[in-house]
Length: 118
Image (cartoon, rainbow, N blue to C red; front, side):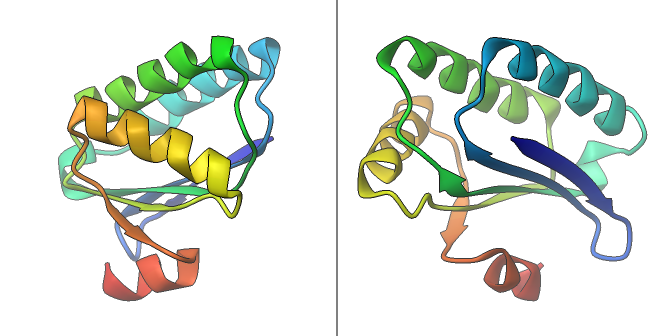
């Protein structure tokens, strides 16, 4: 499950993801992401990726996660923030991808903490 919000006051583009993302839901996410990004100037916004509710991804889904990170980076937001999954294994998976991609993202424990520093 996912949800995309644009907070014009905070100039933040918020993506909340939890559970498993199935292929059909992933395709819908890409469409929604592009549609919402098209409504703003990403260089003026910070992206917030809320992953607290993410669960461990199957091995075959790792490349999809890598592609999402690349897409986020290519969008060119002003800054990137995130929240780590509560699952220790999901956190390790995400950390590995972030490090391999050299994705410059500031992680906090909760969305509230992220929004307080934007």
